[in-house]
Image (cartoon, rainbow over all chains, first blue to last red; front, side, top):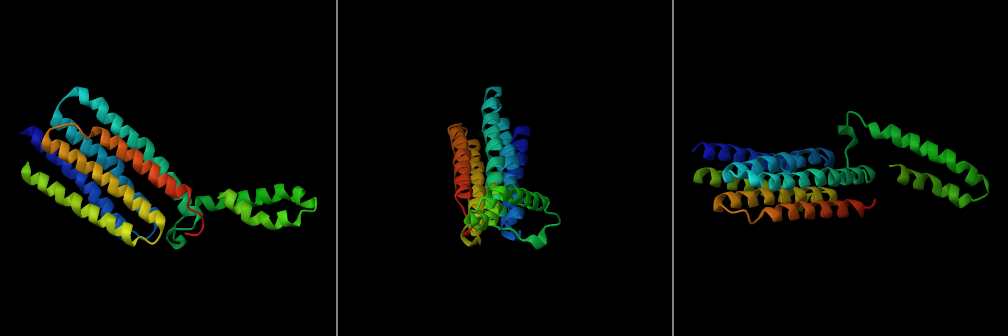
Length: 143
Length: 85
């Protein structure tokens, strides 16, 4: 009886994480805020649901396997979120007016300036095409 | 317990509908990849629910496979996406 109650609470918690992600995906305005909503069922929702399975089964032998499942998701989801977020920043799939602070902007500016200074000696050798290619290529490499 | 299972099922169904709506409508391909990642997470939650209902552990390996597929899918989409949008 107590097991059923605990399992029910954990399951409903995990399901509400999924629902929160769905509502967040529907309502949030741009890619980065949607990514914020999307991580809830991937990590916390899966944790709650796997905990429900562990309580329901009630066997200690199962715990390492469930932890392995969760750990695998925990290792892979930040990497894919990083890739998606970086590509979103590069391809400008974000609404800048919604940002309070863009810490990456300064870094990109500095990297572009650095790269331009590094390319100046090479450009002085007489390769005009290389200099013209410079800003676009360095911006792409820096971001 | 049966009522709880129905409730959880309907919540998951609603969540997957919302995520699929974003996957269909989503303005950019990154939104779609993100929404399909959420759909995979909800599918793994539903797999755990079936394991709890039917008292077996056969789908545990599918959880690992699903997280692997979601990882490879979104990384591939993000990696090969260029400025075209």
